[in-house]
Length: 121
Image 1 (cartoon, rainbow, N blue to C red):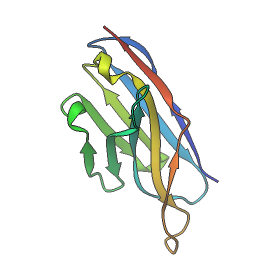
Image 2: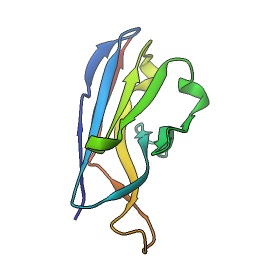
Image 3: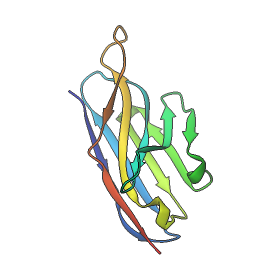
Image 4: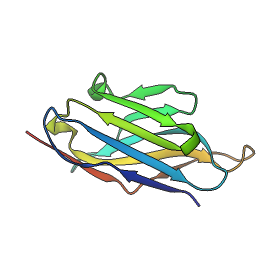
């Protein structure tokens, strides 16, 4: 079993910063990629940023230059540093991990429960 435990959401004024963390727990997991998605009310879930175990990153255009993503491979933890936050960044942020338990099986996606980020104007 895998659990993704998220932390770091909250309420912040526009222009402020927040840092999200997500730790994947489970024995002998092999992580291909971890990242963050978000879902605002009445909108579809969208990619925010992802990072591979090798350090390659991908960002949504709307957050480029403001958000950074990093991963501590030893702790199976991904971090999202969000700077210059805008009201339109308000959403529930979900951690995602693409991982497997053995190199002989197919990797699957796992999701955290989500953490609310609210940016006031």
